[in-house]
Image (cartoon, rainbow, N blue to C red):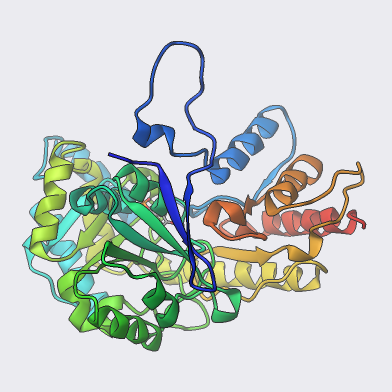
Length: 433
Ligand code: PLP
C-alpha cells in the first residue's frame, strides 16, 4: 500500500501537480532500530501541533502566552450532560455496547437529524464512534483502495489529508480562493474529478475559514456530482450550531436530497456541547457504507465509551438553551477580533460566518523584518515570530493547505482575546522593511 505518500494539488489554472508528502516525520529517530510503516512515516508533523507544543513549553517555562490556536470550546460541558454521565456510572452502564452505539443513542441521533435537518434515517443508517474524526477515518478505511482519490477543498482541516493518506488514498487538494469566500466552485470541482475519484470532502461551517455553504452553493456542487455517480460525499457538519448573523446552517442533504444515497453526514458533540474530551461523534449514510465502517470499528475501538454515549443521549435528545447563549458569546468575540483585525495594516480578514476561527490574510507582512533583523518570508515565520517575540499563539495557513494566512481561534475569553489582539498589533507595528 502506497499510504502516506502522495498528494495531488490542483492549481487555479486547473493543472495538477503530484507531490510527495514533504512534511517531516512525527516519529523521532532515537536509534532504537524501530522501523515505522510507510503509512506512518509519510505523515508529517502538524504545524498546529508544533506551535501548540512550543506554546505550552514556553508557558511551562513561566512565559505569559495567549493561546489563540485552540480548536475547542473554552466552555464547560453542560450540567445536564454531566449529570447523565454520573447517572450512567451509578447505574453501572460500564459494559461493552453494540458496535454502532446503544439503541437509545441511535434513536437520539435519528431524532436530532429529523428535528434539526428535516432528514429521516433508519437505525441501520446511523453509527456512533469515538469522535467525528473516527467516523471519517472509518469511512475512508472502509472504502479506499490504493490510489483512489479524495477531493479535499483547501483551506482544509489538516487531518483530512493525512487520514486519506493513511487509508491508502490520494488527497486531491483543490484551492478555493478567498474571492470565492473560500468555497469550492462547481467549475473547480469539475476540473478535479477523475475516474479515480471516490469521495468529495465538504465541511460547512468550515475549519479554518468559518465559511458556510448556502443552498445554492450545494446545488451547484450537486449538479456537477449528478454527472459522476461513482463519487460519494462526506459532509462534515461538526460546527452546525455555530453560525452567526442569524444565518442558518444548511445541511448538504436538505439542499440536495438526491445526494442522500451517496453521502455520509458527519457530526458530533465536541464543538456544540464543549465535549472534545468525551470523544463522541456520529455519522449517517447508506446502510452498506455504515456496515463497512462498522467492520473497521469492530477491529479498532469496538464502540465509543458507554459513559460518553449516555452523556451524548442527553446532549442530543433536546436542544440545550445554553447552545444559543454560547453562540451569542462567540458572535460577540468574533466581532471583537474582526474589529481589531480591520485596524491592523498588513492583515486582512472577512468576517467568518460560522465556527470559531478567523482565517487571516498576512501577505502584507511578508518581506518585512523583525526588530532582530529576521526576515518574515512565510506565514510559518510570522507565527513563530508572534509566539516567540510577542507571546501569542496562532496557526500558520500552511497547516490548512493555504498560505499566506494564519488561523486565529476566538474560543477564548474576551479578556484573553483583547490581550492577544493587542500583542498581534504590537508584533506587526514592530516589523519594518
Ligand atoms: N471535523 C472538523 C472540521 C474539526 O475541526 C474537528 C476537530 O477539530 C473534527 C472534525 C473532529 O471532531 P471530534 O472531536 O468529534 O473528533
